[in-house]
Image 1 (cartoon, protein in one colour):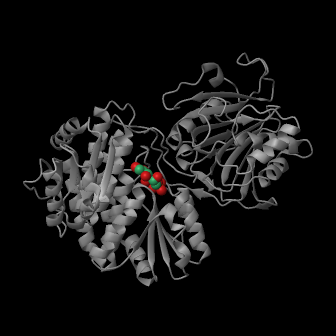
Image 2 (cartoon, rainbow, N blue to C red):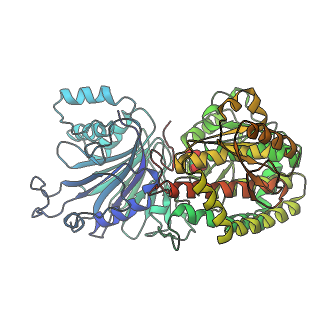
Image 3 (cartoon, rainbow, N blue to C red):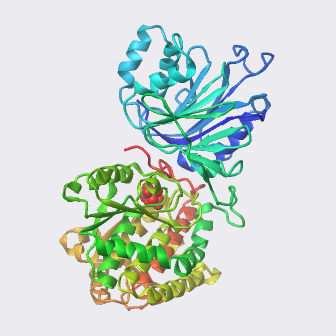
Length: 607
Ligand code: F6R
């Protein structure tokens, strides 16, 4: 079986260049998956030379293994006169990355084309039945069964009912786009994973992220689970499973189309690291009422839980430390995927705070659904307007970090930490202090991004580039910074890196230290300083190479990268330095595209 997390794009309308529109849209969504891609367009003319078996009113498909980013679309395909097309960039978790498995998938008659994000759990039983009925399969995917199932229903009913009835047979969380050449219609339906419908002037776009659509229109509908939209000459929205017609809720996005421009930067990753001073300043200057509201929800709640995954899970962990330190308030922390096993004690008085860049991470979305069922209040901190978590939440704070294109998270985490820090200060009525601290932090990050400072980090990257392991230790807030530093190093440079709480060393970890093993020490000038320095000494005594990052040098550090003393916000320059170190380690190690690390996808929408 193949599972997919991916980018979806579809077009139906008056323009005759569907292939080009879909191809351009997919490029903007590539960060969602990049192991293969494909496009299907309806052929209007039967005189096409591209493929001899393609007749009028059928679909023709172009599929490739690899990234769409640098691909050039076959010029004959691009020239096809078509006003209906769908495309897909795939990230497979099961099943081969092959041209055959790349989407779109067609039915036997080549009049139904399907793309899919998610998993069809009962695909094998459906496939068995369809095989017995004589359907011919061309791939190993679960997705293809949907195309043939629709074909089967089409023998006795019209297109819309056929899609609805086929869709109702499927189990699992999925988002689909189905194009039908005889009627020239496009249908989108979902039980999970995001789909946004863009409404233009006699034309429609569907994408898994609004950034794919902004170039064409700002009027959108965020499709909800168990809804199906039929797009052709007009728009019809139905509620599933029965197909009751409902009125669409239109949103006008006030976002600017930023395109896929790296500007003067070689990679989005570096560009986004450089955007961080602006992101911090924006939160310092404009988030007073949002953070005060969140602080008051926390005050009223009987138990607050912060959760996120990966980098965002560290934001939640920072939240626990920040609230304890600044607000003297206990906040529970959980990794999103573990929250399912911890939530039995949630009540209608609990407050759950999901933290997520995309707002789509399934390991956060799912526990939030369950928390809602228990009556808990949800206050989401997300970067993407209209995302699933944004829509699930009772209260929401948008991070305002701007779209994050590099797969590894940078500016979104810094925005999350800034919001949490300001909220903790707001909780004790001192948002003025939080604001001042953030403005000072933005200034320090600006200094770090100057050439002379960067030269120091590049030098360290050259020294560490051939190391097999890098360890990072910290205590308190800097422990969470250590975890984030190692995640950045692992996913960007592929060097094995582990982060530990300094106090854990003697409980086993120190056995890993050999002569010249590099160990980065996140040393903030707070109650942790003396203890983390003595941990550094213990490592040094076993031959370790010690790199200190923080405001206060120490003789135990073999190398030292200085930040300002920013109290609780010292973690921000510590993280920025480790982002830069990870980036330059990647370049030193000859990694060609640090924006798209191997095996990863930006939005994790399947479990
Ligand atoms: C790592 C990274 C991931 C994400 C995680 C959650 O650099 O970016 O660990 O933080 O997949 O994603 P969101 O924040 O979209 O929920």
